[in-house]
Image 1 (tube, rainbow, N blue to C red):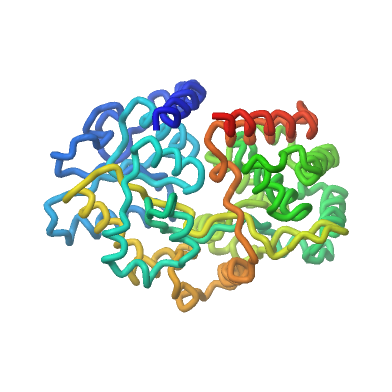
Image 2 (cartoon, rainbow, N blue to C red):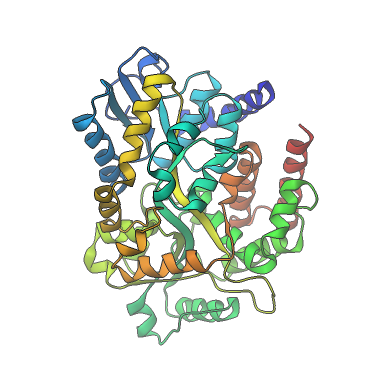
Length: 446
């Protein structure tokens, strides 16, 4: 545990610099309290307030997060009150690491499962909830795959909620029709579509890669379509390497696409959190957007009229590769809520989070373009795009969790940094692969 805690502290040094640059003077959310105070961090087990950190700063996520909190506060007999403290996505990730590295942590908080969640568990900031979980209706309600992603070392440490999120490509059907473009099934077909768009003054892909994880969507998808999932699993286990040809291919293809003008100018300076990628779609200066399927909720909430122009397809296969093209990149649950409290407070917090699996909450999520990770979600869906995404999830032979969530935090940061360098043409794919492999070997040595 001490070693893991030291790694969180080391990572927080980088995080602190980012937060000081990006988030000085930022809002403390709905509590109106200083984020550094013991009340805001939720460290007092005697307090009747349950502090809940999350990323619900904008609709539809804000409405969904608020629903669960308000429902609990209005109906509970526990004597506890949940206080929601939302923070913008990228700032939130840094804020959470820094809080834990300083020995503070809210009573409950959202994360993305994988390596970071495991670090939080090993550092003592997430409690096992097996007994509460098994005594509830959730085992019969939640998808097994979602519960598996919420588990670590044979214990359940989080409740999955909000969305089944896959990486795929949203596209403007009117632009495709105007230029007689067909939905591509291979990379060569995708490149033919992109070439036509460039020739007609349209940017093929809307991408704001200042956040780094957005560009990682392309890297992960290309690597998986080239080599399947074994190269990644082997590299993480230490039996393989991130210098495998599939990772080199992904980097080379990205740089080829950058040079051909498939991405916006200054792509690494554009902000996803500020909505600069989706604005390119709304302006119809870009035709496609490769990102998580939560964009169904984003598009439909922002403009129902625009959403009528949108469709979705799974990332195309690599020509000549025998990799399984049914493999998907993403998560079954998207947001996982973990708990840093005990006793009656933990029971009350669990009660609050359980509201997100109620019929009313599931309907609210579906109405906002989400695919909540419940077994009966197919009965709620009417939107053709969300149905298509759920079908892709059901048909997938395997779903690879996002690299930046699966990898240990320090290694994940190197992945994000080198991926951004690839997009910026400031590092060769070979050098990026070597640097990532070095980080992975260092982590394994610890």
